[in-house]
Image (cartoon, rainbow, N blue to C red; front, side):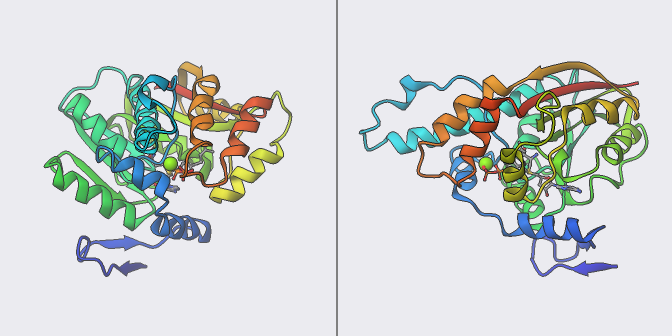
Length: 293
Ligand SMILES: C[S@@+](CC[C@H](N)C(=O)[O-])C[C@H]1O[C@@H](n2cnc3c(N)ncnc32)[C@H](O)[C@@H]1O
Ligand SMILES: CC(C)=CCC/C(C)=C/COP(=O)(O)OP(=O)(O)O
Ligand SMILES: [Mg+2]
């Protein structure tokens, strides 16, 4: 069963029905999302992200908090750190050429897709449950005149139309916590070419802590997601022909972003849970880059 859309951008496109009631809830969540912390940061340069930042804060660029321009500089700095996170993910995709196709699984408003095309000159296919996000990303690609290479569609990342072995590299940037990892990695393994590269940056609960902490539970409730443990990632990858090449604990790298964000006017209330769980070791921010063998 499909439902007709009402918007002009996808007047003829058919939106696939959600595979589960949960996916319907997640589609609604992102169709209705318009948090200033995301839109104001994306307005800085037209790259719209729904992930978090890494790297040292450039306090010299921020200047004096009492200055009238400080808030504008703070927004630009948070955005710079979020774009640095996407650059770090792209650094791990391996050698990608203009004839390759990449897949952004859970592509949001498409900021990382634009960055990937600008870096490699390749095609980038994005999937999201949200028609609002797909329309936003395609509108941005049209404005940037790269819509012949960068395309978002409403599609379940667990059931994509991409041919077996047709994709050079793929990623999940903060979108694995919405799906079962075995189902997810089976689909990446299907459409990735042998020798292709899979990368994810994600928050995961730390098995050394024992079980998800109250902070992790708060983050799950805030985003209606289900954060996995680091152990589950490695087990699900191993079961689906994805062999880790690189694992980076980015927790120390993302804390400065959160400590700066907590001082801004754009706080959403989730900052304490991220800061406290990163500090107590119950939650980790990791990159995993794996080869499809
Ligand atoms: C936090 S956003 C991350 C967006 C993007 N990766 C970024 O870095 O800006 C999570 C994304 O995952 C998508 N998502 C969640 N479950 C999905 C599913 N089953 N299939 C496709 N997309 C899904 C949501 O629609 C949303 O775009
Ligand atoms: C690391 C984890 C567990 C992330 C959960 C997925 C998520 C919602 C990421 C940020 O999206 P966003 O940029 O829309 O969120 P915010 O409004 O907080 O900036
Ligand atoms: Mg955000």
